[in-house]
Picture (cartoon, rainbow, N blue to C red):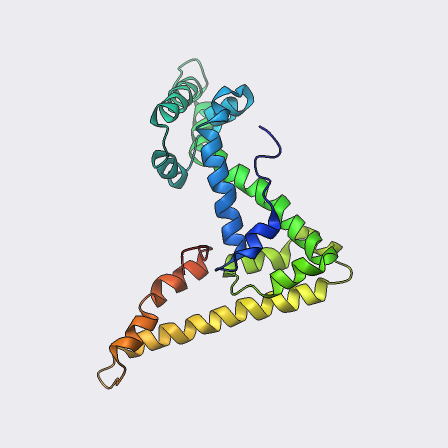
Length: 230
């Protein structure tokens, strides 16, 4: 697999200024990989070996089904099922090994692994850009939101320790943005709940302002605060 398949311009992600930039980053990596799996990867033996061994999780099977390339997916499934028949259902393989293989396959996903691999490198780039580029710091500090899982990821990233000069500023702004967004959501969800109080005097206009509060709160908690999800 080409090492650059997960490479995306970090500044472009942060210039959008809509929702959580790390959610957008992950979605962009995922989109590139979905297109790659049903495209160029079909001709790369090393990738096909891995997809045969790992397969995909339910979420990524659904996403692959939604892409153009049903025949390509069928070919991937053909060789993956052949691998399963050899590793899990062959009577020539000891029972203990067959059960182990079944567990390994059902718990693995080629795309999840590659997204995690790509994201770890992109997050390291975020730290490096914040530490060394004033323009990027301004972009980062002006973001409207960070979801809870990506707030946690950025706060505990292994490479954050390399931020000698601007590490504290990074943490302070990350906390400010994530906290502000969470408090905004609390206000919206509280307003939504109050709409169903018989004593409420709120108008239909007030309901329109908070009608998506439940969905937005769930997105914040599950790393889905990306572009067009607000």
